[in-house]
Length: 507
Image 1 (tube, rainbow, N blue to C red):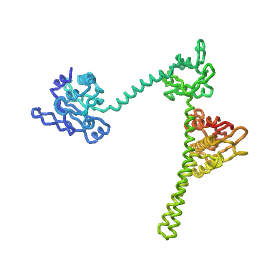
Image 2: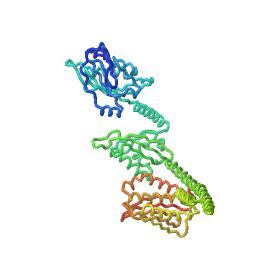
Image 3: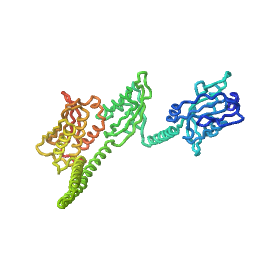
Image 4: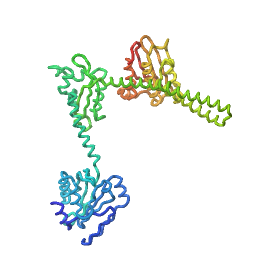
C-alpha cells in the first residue's frame, strides 16, 4: 500500500503544509477542518531549536502539515508548504534513499511497525547539496477502522555524523593497507592456554625455523627480562577487564641474539559473565627503537633551551642594560636642568631594571647550568633556594664532593632537569614538609638524589612507572648512560636517585 492510497483511506487526496507560525494558507475550496490542536509552548520550541531538532505533524484527514519553528529555513531546506507535502518532500530525497523512506513510512502507517518508524536519508537543499537527515515518527491518531489520521515526528541533521563515519571508514581502509605494508602479523590467545599463537610473520621476524616453532613458551621466553613484567601486567589488566585495549612496546630476542623492538596490541574477543577475557586477538609489528627518537627530542630541546637562554642573557639582557644606562644619563641631564619629569624617568629606569632581572631569571631557567655560574652544584643550590621561597617548604642542598665532577654542560643540564622534576613532584604531590637534594661523587660515578618525607610512591606508580615526568627522567638518565631508581623509605617518604658513570660523553 503506497502513501497516496493511505491518504485516500484517511479521507484526503493531498497534503498541505503550514508556515512556521502554524497558520495554514487560504484555500477556498477546502472543506471545514476540525479544530486544530493547541500549539506547543515556547519552551518546547526553544528546546527543539537548541537541540537542532525539527518537529513536524501531518494531519492526513485535513490534508495539512505543520512545522514547529524555522528548522527547515536554518538548514536551507524547502519545508514544502502547501498541498501534497509528503509527495513534494520525498521528491527531493536522494533516489537511492527514497525507496527505503517510503517503505518504512508506509509500513508504519499501515500498522506493521507498532512503536515508530525511523530512517536515515539524503535530501537536496536549496543550494543543490545533499544533506543527511534522520527522520523518526509515529502515528498519533487512527480511525476506528485503523486508518492513520495523524502522524508526528522529528527530523534531525546528521550530516556531521555521516561525515565522521565516512572519514572513519576511510581511515580504517588506509590502516589495513598500512599494516599489510608494514609486515605485521596477527596473533590469537586462548587465555586458558596461556601462550598466544602467532602468524608466520612472528617466526620470520625472530628467525625461528622448523621444530623451533613448536617450542613451549615460544613468545614469553623471548621477551627481554626488563620488559617482561610490564608486558605481562598490561596483558593481565586487559584479561581482567581493567582496560579494553592491550598495548605494549617491548624487545624480543632474535635467534641470532639481537633484540628487536615490537609494538603489540590486542583486544578481548570473548569474555565470561564476570567480564574476564576468554580470548584475545591482536597484531604485532616490528618498530624502530622507540626511545631513540625520544632521546633525540630531549637532546634537541636541551640544546635549544641553552641557545635561547644564552640569547636572552647576551642579547635582550644587554639591550635592556644599555637602555637603562641611557635613561640614567638622560635623568642626570634633566636633574641639572631642573626638569619636572625627573621622577618619571626614574620610574622608567626602575621598570627597565625589573625587566632586566626577569630576563636574567628566564635565561637561568632555560640554561640553568654553565661554567660561568659555577656549574651543577651552584645551580642546584639556587634551585633549592628558589623552591623554598616559592613553596614555603624547606628544601636543602648538600654536596659531598671532594672537587667538582668533570661534567660537560649537556650532562650537567640533564642532571639538573632530573632534580628539578623530582623536586617539583615532591613539593606538589607528596605532602612533604622537607626535601633534600644531594649531589655526591665517588670513584667513577656521580649520584644525584632527591629525598622527601612525604607519603611516598603508590605501589601502582612503582610498578607501572608510566608517568610522563618519570619517563622523561628515565630517558635523561639513559642518555647519560646512567640509571634512575625510585624507592620508598622504610620510615616514609620517597627517594629518586640518578647514577651517572663518569667518563662517558653525553649526546
